[in-house]
Length: 148
Image 1 (cartoon, one colour):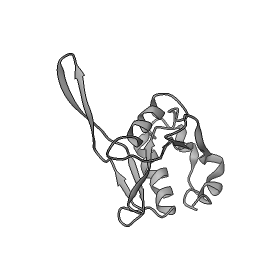
Image 2 (tube, one colour):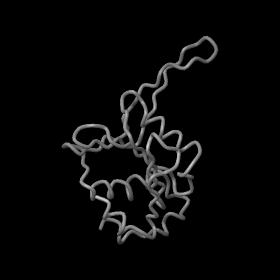
Image 3 (cartoon, one colour):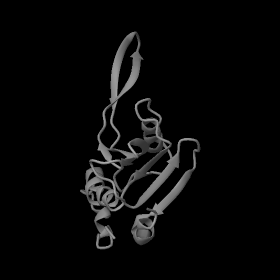
Image 4 (tube, one colour):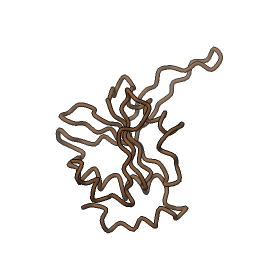
């Protein structure tokens, strides 16, 4: 089990931010679940997505959005996963809306999206506002690894 020796007390350190969650928690979990940079079940990191043009007054602006991870199953986008700092809310609000916007983007169109702040991993379906899985990583690392 990937995180069984991880010291979760580091999540209380103000220097342990989103990038640390990505490297120390999410990436090991994804590797344990069989995802890698190649193959049918692959991870695409920081995929730049062109958002439809936004107008500010009469000026058209091009905006790019970048999800942390797009996970492919059998070479099809299956889930978008976004990392957040340990103090961030991943159950509702702007962070959830951000991840949802990645999942429904025309270049992705995944049915699932999730957020992880190191303490929890929350998974949503694009068809429901409530989460379909809310995994307490601090207390349930062993149980989460059984979800394969």
